[in-house]
Length: 102
Image 1: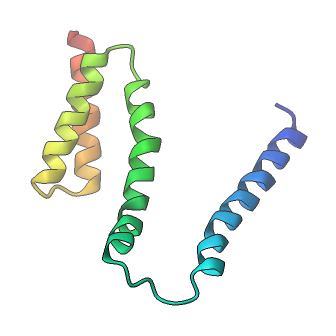
Image 2: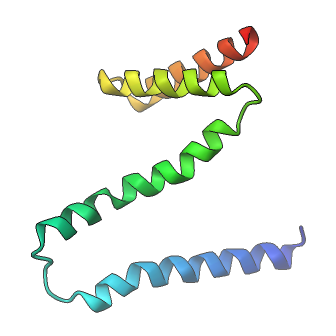
């Protein structure tokens, strides 16, 4: 890739991010009263994070079994209150070991 493409991509991403953040501020000048809409907006960052993370997780290895086991260990670790670092380490170790086995 040349540097012009890289700088153009960075500028386009910055503009799109700015527009996405400014539209709600421009349209909603009053506090949002709807409980449904408030809860919808509350969960949007989590959904976007999952939508960006899961394809990368399942395409990171040739073994789908290793990916599934890593995700399951991460979910169980997070459920029982492990820190983010502990969850990441547990999932990576389990995925690595299961990739060697399967």
